[in-house]
Image 1 (cartoon, helix red, strand yellow):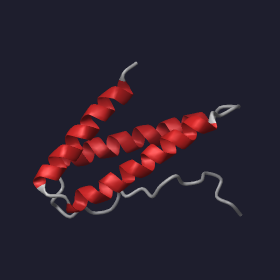
Image 2: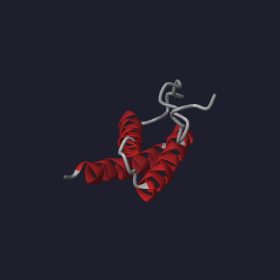
Image 3: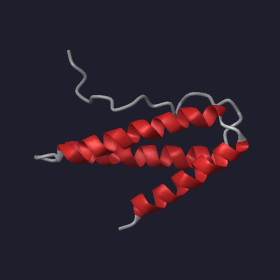
Length: 96
C-alpha cells in the first residue's frame, strides 16, 4: 500500500548531533525546513494545488537538508555563514 504522505526529504531533526554544530545555525536551518514542509503540506491540501510551488519548495527543502548535513562537519566559520544565511532566509520567509 503506498504511503499516503510522500516524503519530500529525510527528516534528520531527531538524529543526535555531533556536538560541533552552532546551536543557532542548527535552529535556523531546522526552522526553514519546517517552514518549507508546512507550505508543501498546506499547498497539497488545497483542492487545486500549485505543483510549481510544491516543486520549488521541495527543491528548497532538499537544499536545506543538504545544508543541515553539511553543518555537522562544518568548521566554526562555515557554521556562522550557514547560520547567518538561514537566519536571513527565515526572516524573508516570515514576512507578510
